[in-house]
Image 1 (tube, rainbow, N blue to C red):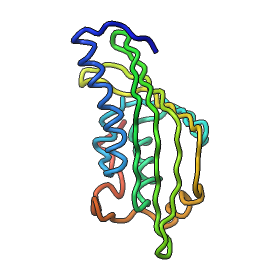
Image 2: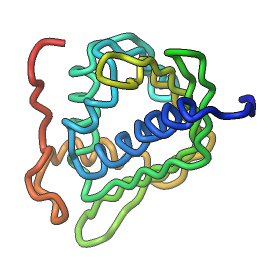
Image 3: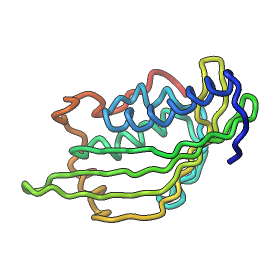
Image 4: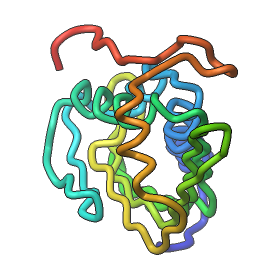
Length: 176
């Protein structure tokens, strides 16, 4: 991470790149899979070694995986902070701290799983704007019940009070 004098073009690029982490959080938490998909290039390198996922895949497969994993929760809340961006022409590296909360009500009792860590994303400028080409997440702490993911998956996607049936499943727009 380096601090350099910023030009207006640099500031505009940084603002556009920062919007990628906002789209990441809002897309997941609002189940807006079209928004979530829009922040990625068509091919995505995913490095989530902590979860066993380290591979390159089509973005539609990635979005469907995230939707299947998170849509069954009663609520999720992803918060990104301390965003820093290293610009290098039409490429950049985006760093952000994160905290994610996953809530699931079981027999009238609210259960929660929380993780924290940091993202390192590689982004490129494409014809339609900046897009993430590599998603990397390192988890530095975890608390709560990791088993909530299995229990949520067993229940399957269902409506949520704040977004209704929106985004219960991801339907790809076409081949990717």
